[in-house]
Length: 252
Image 1 (cartoon, rainbow, N blue to C red):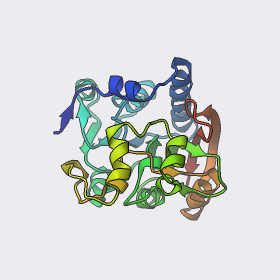
Image 2 (cartoon, rainbow, N blue to C red; image 1 turned 90 degrees about the horizontal axis):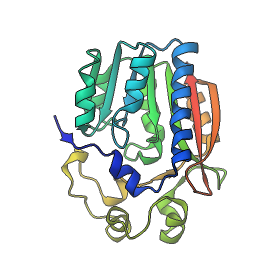
Image 3 (tube, rainbow, N blue to C red; image 1 turned 90 degrees about the vertical axis):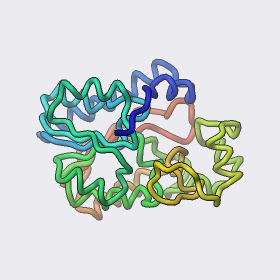
């Protein structure tokens, strides 16, 4: 099982979060989980990409607070914190891999809800909308908390904005190695084996990929047979002018 040290401190060091902003984001995610478990009677779920930066925080919150017995926590690797806390929850499965891969979706199986917190904007090959299609056949509820783009009427691939505009819109700088390489080596193959397939730098999950607008997300979910049962605007994503944290629950 791939194991990495806790990434919480790394996550906070890379993104200069204000404590109050972080508190509001965490509270918003917990309230979304509370709504799903209390109002929609969710009893099983898969938390996709729920390890990086948060050590499975929302998986453990749901299982402890709402007595969820069956869940999957899915990510490329797990942390020591996750492995330790899992011992308290025998019904929790750790699925290691890319949740956009067909074999991982098969391992997860049918669940009441799929949780996508801060991950849709990173998904390429398959893209964010294809991820929704992939899981729509094995769940009746999506819980989405995502930085949503407010500077256009339609969804944009952020890299297509050009380097200057790209960095004007994201909480990273061109001096960071991962982001520098995204432009300098855009169409070169990334060497990291964890992607489980040959990916160019342009298509790695480590960087901000999409500016997803609400209308496109809602329309996509409607096309898949889901209606919106919950929405909250939790304000700006940190200090970004063109991104807001929006919380959604979609139900089929």
